[in-house]
Image 1 (cartoon, rainbow, N blue to C red):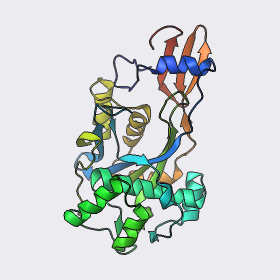
Image 2: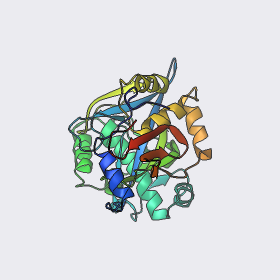
Image 3: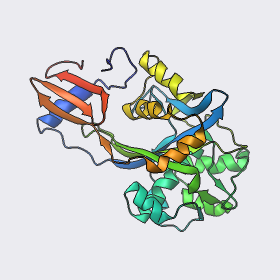
Length: 293
């Protein structure tokens, strides 16, 4: 089992107190907000690399941790008719375990956040193309308006006559923030391949650096305690190490289990045991009056 002092597992200092409050009935869990995040991949001579950003240490949630581009669902994207390529909304609803409006909003969030934070847009003028260049003042004005939520993604696509390429995404896994966390998200993780001709850039105000890194190398950095990550991030990195190309990962996505992973905390022999089902490496034993071990 990984040790909290040896690896890079993100563990907020307020968690033990909040866990004890939840176990004692003194904490009411907040409702998680829907979110999407994207593991953007590109092939290299040594296998696929994934695009990651490091959240600014000033961020209230997971400051200093490495993550993928992602963010919350915009409810304005759930009922607008948008030009759509790839599997139908009904197919995505079945895959994601939500209704069709919710599926559209979640897929839109994945594509929007990738554009907002990495400058990569999974959309094009026709159902079988992607835009080749998203630089320039007009594009940046639109991106800034999206970030500020002055412009919905549906309106952005409509205004530029673009088709959302849902076929370029693969739903990978789903994690729900623990009940004792003050900021909770129900997050769908997607995998995507960097479109030909597009390049990533650090377009996020929430990140102080971005990297392209091999999943195995990123996992090794976490294991050495050099890279700070939340459990779903390191878990998905370890899963990606099985694939030799970005296309292989995309092809594997439809068969993956999307049963939500939700951490649980239970009282056991004078300590609180924090665990994530199916992911034993993240288990923490918290004395009723002390720090985790």
